Image 1 (cartoon, rainbow, N blue to C red):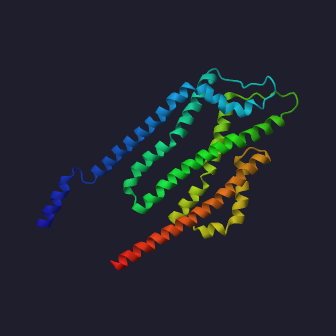
Image 2: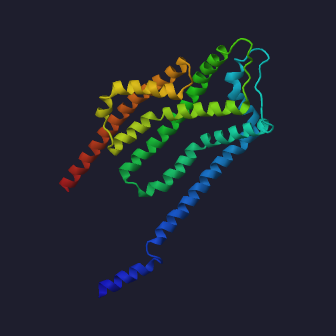
Image 3: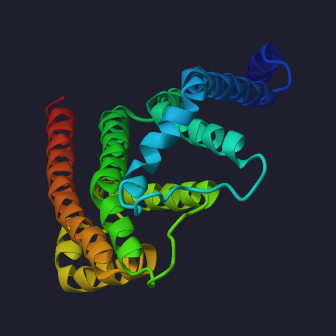
Length: 267
């Protein structure tokens, strides 16, 4: 009887039983979303002021390859105003990505074990850096090669003058493709950490992966062979780096488990 009264008293301490923790999680989630959006907005304000200059920098790989007198065109009335601001908004999200990922991390961290926290933080940092490296690789190496190919294959008498909106969509697509492609090491480490695959299984399938990366590059990259090779080769190199990182992670994880077992046994 006393145990029943204690149980009733404990359940009465929290109105609504298990609903209060759910409400607290929803409030925390809303707070993190608001902070993430504020971070993106803070990054957007200065970029919106320099939106036209930023777009000019983005269009530079194409502009310097156009023939004399060649320019970009705007086929929609509001495009000269809206397209640079669209670019500024996308760039603001990319710049604020570490802050957004931190808010996600701060929300899920209380529910993770200590060993999971030690892995997630380096994984978030490395994945962010890899995405930035992929975008920079695309801007400095891929875009000039792609545009040189497109301008070079234009038939005689055809003036290459692309629309500003279509150009932005094309470049953003390539940025996403190469940014996500460079996430390959982080994805491999995550798959091995969850136990979905092992580094040994991935290493045994190198021949299939080599064929697969060229197949994926043929689909995602522009139609010229150079762009496909420039996408496929980094993909395979990143695959090998991912295997090395996964082996190190598995080795560290096994060492930590053995240390925990030995300490519990001695205790």
